[in-house]
Amino acid sequence: MREPSETGDTHSSGRGVLGAVAPTAAAVAVGAAGCPPPAAPAAAGVPARALGRTGAQVEPVSLGGEGILRTTGRHREAVPVILEALRLGVRYCDTAPAYQQSQDYYGEAFRAAGPGAREQVFLASKTHARDRDGALRLLDDSLRRLGTDHLDLWQLHDLREIEELDAIFGKRGTIEAVEQARADGRVRHVGITGHHDPRILVEAMRRYPVDTVLCAVNPADPARLPFLTTVVEEARRRGVGVIGMKVMAAGRLLQDRAASASELIRYAASHADTVIVGCSSIAEVRENLGARSLSFPMPPAERAALEARVAPRAGRYDTFKAG
Image (cartoon, rainbow, N blue to C red; front, top):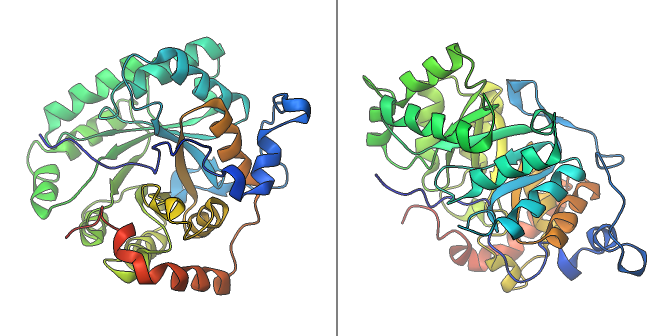
């Protein structure tokens, strides 16, 4: 079974995602005399957005399942990251079986946060199994690790080839597990994810009425195999919720100083209902979720200018797409 390689732009670059390039977020991240900022159950003045037809209300920025969460044996660092996100009122949390102990960390954090903590978030996990029985085994293991009796969103993880869709939607494929889990209440909504080939995600939406799609969204996207003019447009036409990832192009857009993190988040969240960004520390949680107070959406002219700026080196920022 292929190990999913998909990420939500969650690896650390040694600083917060916004860092020095986003003054608004930096102000949120560092209180007076270096003290932690006060608890903020939601970003002031930022209206919630509907996540497609799920009925869930999300904010522009959400918590990814990687960063420090995609590790093994680092509970002392990972669990406080989740607890801080919960304290700051994060609405959407992402994880997956493929992300090492990410699900274990979430489960421990929910227990530590106390009764009702898990119910305060829209919890999404995934399955990389392409068969019914394997998917159900993964689902039950996810529920056990997360310490919950249901997922708000169960996603078919990292779709790449037509043959995978044939297996998923064929006899005893994963879709049978989806139908069974929805019927018995273990799963409320179903989604698809991928960053490899937009045509596969479009075809998956045609084959089954999914509730959400998680796909790559950054200003290098229009140059080759675009998701914005294919997957996102198809999702909007069908009322499917859109979740953005690869916002920083695996950190390369920041490393090259091609754009600031605040620009990239604003760009992605102007196309998606929410974007997932992982964290490597409590400070990064504060900075990333501080981005909820940025101005949304980014005006079309500003988006076009950003795409034009990135275009000359777009190939460096889309290496996760099909060759």
